[in-house]
Structure formats: C-alpha cells, structure tokens
Image 1 (cartoon, rainbow, N blue to C red):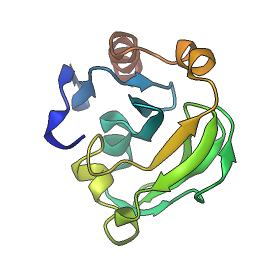
Image 2 (cartoon, one colour):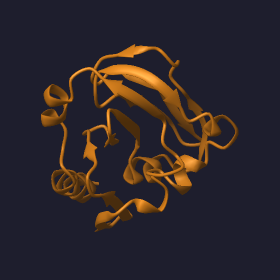
Image 3 (spheres, rainbow, N blue to C red):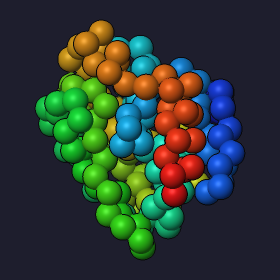
Amino acid sequence: MGRLTVYKFRVHTLKGEFQIPAEFHYTKEHEWVHVEGADCRIGVTDYAQNSLHEIVYVDLPKVGAKVAQMQSLGTVESVKAVADVYSPISGVVLKVNSELSDAPELVNKSPYEKGWITIIRPDDLKKDLPSLMTPEAYRDFVKKITEKK
C-alpha cells in the first residue's frame, strides 16, 4: 500500500478529523478491509485509533487460523482501553504485521498503511463484502456517532 493510499474523505467532527480511504470497506466496529488481489489486508480505522489514543500493545492472530466474519482476531490495547479487533471477512490468516510487536504505535501513526493488523485469504468475498460499509456509508456513520457524543 505505501504511499498509494487515496483518501476519499476527511471527516471533520467535534472530536477531530478522520481519514477514510477510498476503495476500502468498513465495519461498524471500526475495522477496515482492503482487497489486494486474492487476499485482503485488515486493520483498524483512523477513528478507532484516535478513540483509543496511545496504543501500547497489539495481540495479533495466529498465522493459519481460520476466522469467521466478525470473529475476534485479537485486541488492541491502549493506555485508555482494550478493544477487540474483528475480522470484516471470513478466511484464513496468511500473515500478521509483526512490526506491531515492537512498535504498536504504528496503528496510531499510520492506521491504513504501516499499522495494518493482518492479511487474510478470504473464503467468499462476494458473500462478505455486501454486509460492510462503503467509504461514504462509513463517513456518514462516523458523523452520526460523533454528533451523539
């Protein structure tokens, strides 16, 4: 992904500004999935990392683990809270971002590029993707929940 991420939206709310990349899909629990050929990269959104504040530990899934859509992949721990990270899709864990073991703050600094959590080989994207939010729907969702707070 590197410098190729294109930000479709920058959402301005009372809680700050959040970036929402184009061509990603999102969950209501604030995970993202980016389809990259036959595999999918997964992480937590800019809104999620901002809400958690300073991330100090990431519990990564095991390579080879089979996960169902919305099953917990692990946790992200901050000085403020511990949050489950749910898989937006069903599939098998192919790779984890081992850099997060020594540098969990990458989730804060670069949630869509260097701070990704795992890469999964999906079981059935045609089945899973329609239940996820588009960038536009996620933008509206973030605006709605931040207006309530």
